[in-house]
Image 1 (spheres, rainbow, N blue to C red):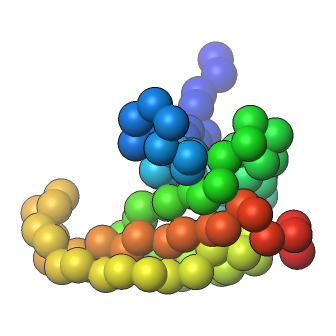
Image 2 (cartoon, one colour; image 1 turned 135 degrees about the vertical axis):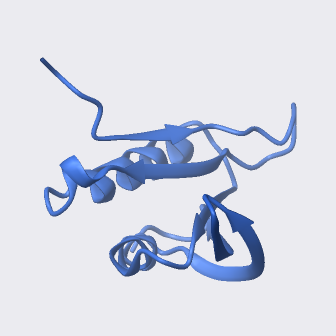
Length: 105
């Protein structure tokens, strides 16, 4: 039996907006340590560059340190943080952005 170990949600800003999806790349515990999150983010970035997007926005919570390292490794920078209450917990949502016009690092 196969199970999904992660996913990406594409939230477009609208036609002609010039930037790509607000990608929420999620890896589950079953994929932890296997490089799945890194590959998901890499695939999103590669797709967006190939499609001509100028920018990507990625939203996550501040809890997963491994996710933050993945975002930074792919060139995303933290641009905003907002507290919220979800999943029965007080969390801090984060917006990460990547300028796709810059040369890949």
